[in-house]
Every structure is written in C-alpha cells, then in structure tokens.
Image: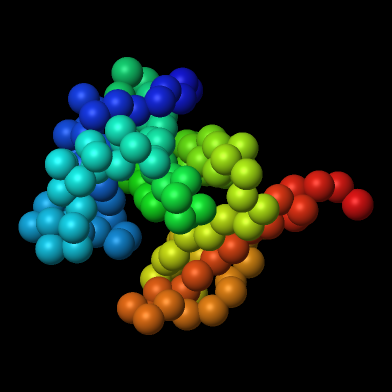
Length: 151
C-alpha cells in the first residue's frame, strides 16, 4: 500500500472512486449540484486543501481530502473491493496529521445521521467524537489534538 499526494491531474480518479462507493453513493450530477465539480476540486487543491490517494494492487484504492481553511476532513472514500484492509485508516491518518500540522487544535468532519452506517463505527474507532447535528442533518464529529496525546 502506498499513499501519494493527489494533484489536479488526479481529479478524475478521485471522482471515479467517489462515485463508486456503496454507502453514501452520489452520482457526478448529484455532486455537481452540491458544488463538487472538477474545477472546484482543482481550485481547492491549488489553494487550501490537500488530497491523498492510496494505491494498492496497482489500483487507486481510495482517497481522503482535507480543507485547511475549515479544519475539516472533506472526504474519505474507499473502493468497495478494498474495504476492511486499512486503506481508510491510513488515509485518515494523513488527513489528520496534515490538518493538525496546519495549527488546528480541533478538526471536524460530517457524516450521515444513521448510526448504522459503517462510517460511524469507523470514526468512533479512530477516536472521533460526535459533537452535534449540522443544519443539513449530518452529524459533526470532532477530534482534538489533545485527544492524540497519551495520559
């Protein structure tokens, strides 16, 4: 497994992974309605955001994207055939480390409100804490830099 920093040249791969997931699936059209377009992603990567690709078995297995201006993990998606193999955990570690290195003491992410979603257990397992419901109904999870310190 190898993690690389994504560039605007990787946007088609990011979108292919994003639209290929089983849970929380969204089409390119749905993403576009939410403002998630190739041009917007390229702008984010050139300015305040970073994305990481995980490569496994000669394939792009998943990606994570974080926005330093908002202290948020913007996206984390793994192709179904690579689930349960540590891809998400490795990508999340990259995103968290980068956001904390940007000077944030607390970072956040949003996910669906259905606690049966695999994402809920995954985030809880990694030390994220539910911290309220956003206007759009998603649940906000937070992680503090202090949570990473022993004792």
